[in-house]
Length: 151
Image (cartoon, rainbow, N blue to C red; front, side, top):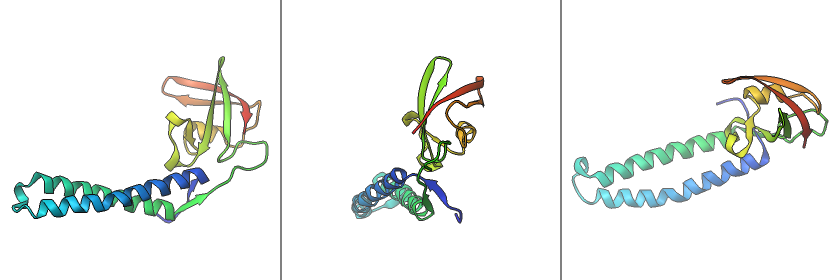
């Protein structure tokens, strides 16, 4: 990865916390692997195989997070009146209002109402202001969003 990965400050903090948790878990798995290895025949030892697979999975996750953090660029929301990276946007669809924060790909999580700036809705909202209306193609058809507030 050569290009910067855009994140909010809280997104970067979360990535770093996850990395520390994974790194702290590693010695326990190495210990399990060592104990399982001391039990003899490795080809028939399910504890050894499971610990080895768990360690491989953890190591790849640690490497991925380290690379992600290394290439992350924290972007602060702009102070102007148009939607940009990091802003929380309140939209209205029909009579329902909902809010989303525009974030980077690694921290996007629709359940937490965090959408990627590269998602169809994120891209449609970028650069818009309160009162604007955007249409986004969704699996159920076009959805029209009225922008109500930007924070």
